[in-house]
Amino acid sequence: MSQEQIKDMNQFFYRASAADFMKIPGGPVAYWVSDDLRSVFLKNKSLGELGEPRLGMATGNNDLHIRCWQEVSYNKVGLNFENRKEAESSQKKWFPYNKGGQFRRWYGNNEYLVNWEKDGEVIRTLLHPSGDRVWGHNFNLDYIFKSCLTFTATSSSHFGIRYSPAGFLFDNKGSSYFTDPEFIFPVLGFLASKPATNILKAINPTIEFQPGNISILPFSDAAITASVNNLVSDIIQVSREDWNSLEVSWGFSDSPLLKIANGSGNLLLFYQCLREHWKNTVLKMQRREEENNRFYIETYGLEKELTADVSLKEITLTCNPHYRYGGKLADEEREARLQSDTLTELVSYALGCMMGRYSLDKPGLILASQGETLDDYLNQIPKPQFAPDDDAILPLTDQEWFPDDATNRFREFVRVVWGEEHLQENLDFVAESLCLHAIKPKRGESALDTIRRYLSTQFYKDHMRTYKKRPIYWLFSSGKHKAFECLVYLHRYNEGTLARMRTEYVIPLSAKLSAYAEKLEQDKDASNSAAETKRLEKEIATLHKQQTELAEFDEKLRHYADQRISLDLDDGVKVNYGKFGDLLAEVKAVTGENPT
Image (cartoon, rainbow, N blue to C red; front, side, top):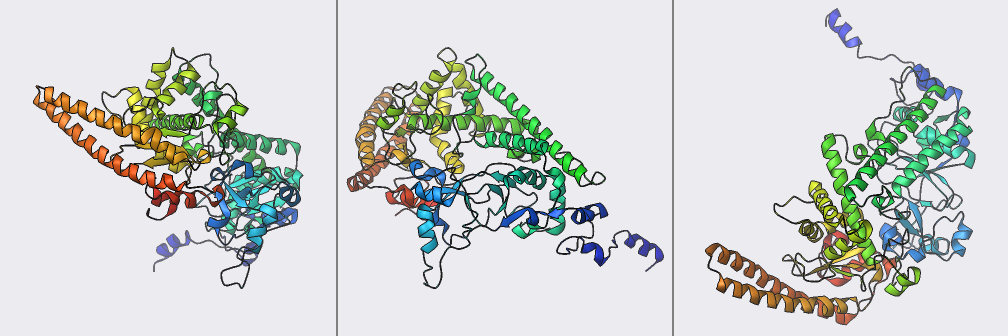
């Protein structure tokens, strides 16, 4: 090998002493780490000295013990309890459970509940099938329900650290760090900063973050100030408001489009105002995060190797399309998706108002516990602007067979919220927005027909995605020809729901299809156009298939209606959904099994 070749190779070698490695706890072979970064460990105490990182519990059987919060009765959910004694005295059954989730910083991912009734009696005493040991373990009894910092254990690149207020238990995929209240916000600021990210990469280059990684991180007392506390508190509040703008948050109150006041009934202008508000929110968050980075970079003396800059894709707010959709799309594509998704979320909220889950007259959940009725709704809101459906059965047919179907009720919702004067232009805007991403545009289609098509073909797919295959509005379907489909609100289902579905909708629809088939036959006989005759023949053939499908569905529906099936929401959607055979759509996706 020539001297020149050796010289070229030397540029790829690093020289570092073993003593340098030992400056970092655990002595990781991080040869690229600068002297300035190594010195941070020598000058500061560790987070393990300031608090306690803890690995979360293993339930042993998540299907048995854990639920998405939306699938149980809300009156059995215990929120904001600060200790075990309070939680036990409440006689609630389901309590918030940190379980990691997608990459998100500062606040959020509050999606799950765990059965901790009677201080965890079931989960703490249930034996493994072998009888040799307790199934669940690592319950962290001295730490549960305390405020903490929780993090997603597995991440490909970033450390998703979030503030968790009092009231949570935590999973081994949502491990947590506990410290005194006066330290918790400064520590969060540090763990979400660039210095912490760089240090974590040095001590643990894998994608799995463990409590031990957190305990050895160096923390400066200089961060324990009112200004840092206020800065991080402000960041958390922005992230909390963003999280609560989503239906999947138990802090959700109403559609963000309803919070915007602009003196107009034009929905397009409402969206433009909301979009401007979101842009300002993201930019505010970017400034705050850069201020946080700058403080810790300067505190640790790392100005030579780190900048405070935060790219838009790192701002983990759902209202930020750069984070929500990733960095591969063009700006125009991101904007189109955000507009489309915002309007599909409006449709979902409107359906919630139809079901009685939400109301235009009162923020937050209205009916969300098992067996609640229209009377329960009216006891809270005697004179609603937009009344919920009598039976929480909403037809989603591809034609207007029922005056109170979901499409017509949505039209009424838009009229009530934004007024008669702008009704058509608002429906046009909804339809145009849906066609930006949710569904493909169809030439010559009216706005209401586009909305009907979205509800009939795409809404349930979106609903399944939003609720992680644990839907709260269940789609009863006659089959692939879509002769009859309807949504039923899980929390308002009762033993008579199927019988009412049959008598109020399926049997009347059978008569309507027969009458329509006769009309089409008459039109075909009277037609003088070969093209028109061919079109009518095709429509008649489709209609006959629907009639056959509906008759078969009616027979199955009668069989299940006679059983007067009851549900126990504590069992969860996965178990309850399987009780209806193939009356429901997407059975395998929900239960994991083919319908029987």
